[in-house]
Amino acid sequence: MLKTIFEIMNSAAKNGMQKIPFDQELILNQIEALVYVADLDSYRILYLNKRAIEVYGDVIGKFCWEKLQEGQTGSCKFCNKEYLLEHKDTKKLISDKLNPINNKWYEVHEKLIDWPGTGLAKLQIAYDISHRKEDEINLKTLLKQQELFSNIALTFNQQKSFAHKVNEVLKIVGKFVKTDGVSLFENFAKNSKTKLIYEWCNTDVSPKIDKIPDFSFDKHHPLYKKIIKDKIININNLKESKYANSLNVFIKFDVKSILLIPIFLHKKHIGFITFEECKKQRVWNENEIKLLQTLGNIISTAFERKANEEKRLRSEQKLKIANATKDRFLSIITKDLLTPFSDIKSLSSLLYDSYDRWNDEKRKLFINSILNSSSQGYKLLDNLMVWSDIQSGKISFKPESIDVKSVISQTIERLKSRADRKEIKISGIPDKQIFVFADYHMLNTIFHNLINNAIKFTKFGGSVSIKLKLLKKLLEVRVCDTGVGIKKEDLNKLFRIDIDQTTFGPPEEKGTGLGLMICKEFVKKNGGDISLKSDSKEGSEFKFTIPLSKWYTYISE
Image (tube, rainbow, N blue to C red; front, side, top):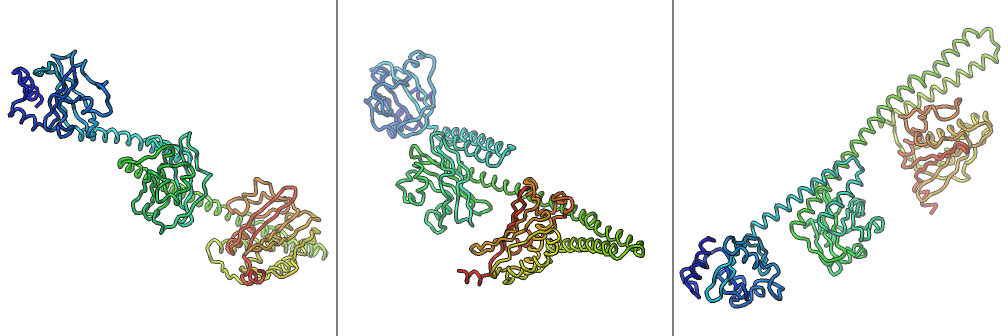
């Protein structure tokens, strides 16, 4: 086809024709290309075929730089006149150019020809290659996107914290799409609120993280409905948009344009990702939006992987604790429970063999030792059974209104003889009745174990005190002692059966720790919390809460 056009033009020039013959003109007008001729010296247009006229209009006789280009005030700097003169008889020039008039890409063929009456002229034939160029651009974009996703995958597979990986991915994406900031929000409070958890922004943009409060969103609000329905909201002028009030938190940080994409996990809305422009307004094109929506899916998958990893680690930790608990349980049975029964056996055997030779005082001494050992064994066995019932869910729970003053008084009375033997003073019986809502047996056990422990670990002549404080709907109880205390590094080991606790306390007062673990379970079962403050020089303070009786709360108010 190019050869045909050149032949037509050369034939016209050789024959000195001022006008191309009708039949040849018909051929030129049927060609799927723009054809034009311009004088090489004056730059005036000498000829346009039909398709060129459709694009430029009938501009024959006008300057080519004026009518075929935009914004030119003289001959174009990119004009190939000199190159064509240099290669006049040997080459035609071929190049891809974007036509500024119709914004289409053309493969342009240029060659010098002789034109009747003017001399040398430039012939230009331009084939529309917009589709090909679009495919090339799409291919380049696709390759860049593949590189982007590869970098994201490599980042998420790094052996670093999840927060570090997410921040790095936001940075990679933000730089790829050339935006000022990328923010990731996570929903909470049953998806009624959202908070900014990760952010990347350019160095010249003020970060929002830790500066904006968590904010609520109404699921019936038009903005929220639009976001969920369209899976996106694209606002190029945020300040003037109808959603300016709803998104005012971004305007405060000079955000001019925003692209907001909701993130879903298994069809559940879990958060948002936003792309922000702070220096200028921006309209995101369709390809960019598709890319960033894909990123939202990748972020969603990453959160799912994180959740699965945390679930796996929790399961491993539970299994580890369960195995350690089983081992500790067996250790208590085979070692701690064996000791008192071994003492009973040896003491009773010795008493039997020496009964006739000993006087009453010595016999009573041995009988008392046997009684203490049997009490210790019984208490340990009772605790083991209670702990077993707790773990299997067999223990009954019957909450009722209970007078704490009565429970404390009875507990102190039961433990008085033991405290008297060490000359330990116990104080803290309240002056008036305070009613809580709890299981009576559990509450008794909590007070007994904590006060008994305080006596056990308090030295001769020390003190134990019970302090009560009324909160809004709870009663706070503190059991304080002046005992040996617990080292800071051992505080986190209490309330755990998987750790051997016979290492805590003085040699003569070591225990298994089962009593404290039962206290923790009972407090939790009754809707409270338990904690410990301790100093190896000042003693310990066990603090727990228990719900107040509803009618008592009403009377107090």
